[in-house]
Image 1 (spheres, one colour):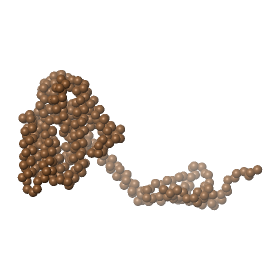
Image 2 (cartoon, helix red, strand yellow; image 1 turned 45 degrees about the vertical axis):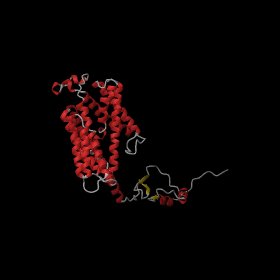
Image 3 (cartoon, helix red, strand yellow; image 1 turned 180 degrees about the vertical axis):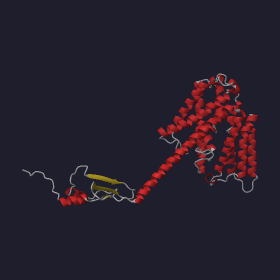
Image 4 (cartoon, one colour; image 1 turned 135 degrees about the vertical axis):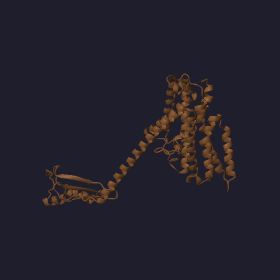
Length: 401
């Protein structure tokens, strides 16, 4: 018969010596050595109730070691904590809390100023006329100044010669005058051609060696910051046909124009601006929730999933407002109007992102707290006004709407 299994006998002195080991320092990434495991088998710790032994785990920085101590409750030995580690942990916590505070403050500024801009823009659009035109001219002037500063920045100027400052300032003033001339004459083609000719003359006759890059950047600034925004004036103030079927016009006060105040231009402008805001909002939410596939290298944060969500939100908003305002009258035309608004806003944003990327900056300016520059806020509207005006003047009459 085999002898019964017996547990190894542990002498009291040896058990006390093993239990009195204050620390067992182990390299964080190394395995247990062989002799340590053999010692553990040869000299196991005595089994005691959980209340007798306690386990302390001290985590320090990755460059240090992981210390584990098996101490009796009544033992006097305690792990020595480096005060430098405590200071480092406190510094990290302070930095994290400071970053959260800055993000919260930035978000509050963004929301407050965003609501203020939205309410102010809504009142300006409803007012129309000179109020709307002067507001567009002021925004155009600020956007033109930011555009020419981007052109003069180190990232773009490293590969080209920027226009002189006096030419940039003259171009900014010309861009601001274009919406006013559009309201007065109703047509902007002659003024744009004359302005481009004046800028070309100033660049050719300047001292030094004129460069083609100066002419191209200046003329594109006239087109991008001056000519394209003028279509918003033509859309809002030029299409003065009353939208008599609009339900809101029936309850609109007579002091504010009554039913005749609701023109096709006003309704189209409200639907377009609301659709662009919905597209940006849905694209941001959809991209944060489902974004996986990058849309383009120009703006790495934009995704295909976010773009699809933005397109859906833009179409839904256009269709919903068309039912409320009774314009356009068909579902197909309202959906097409929403798609057109989304395409204009998306590519307008991408073009401005391309300019900022070449300039090596994140924002075009710091005029609006929490939002950046004025060009960062109106980039989605630059091309949309021209597309919407062409849709109303050319496409809808072809379909009999």
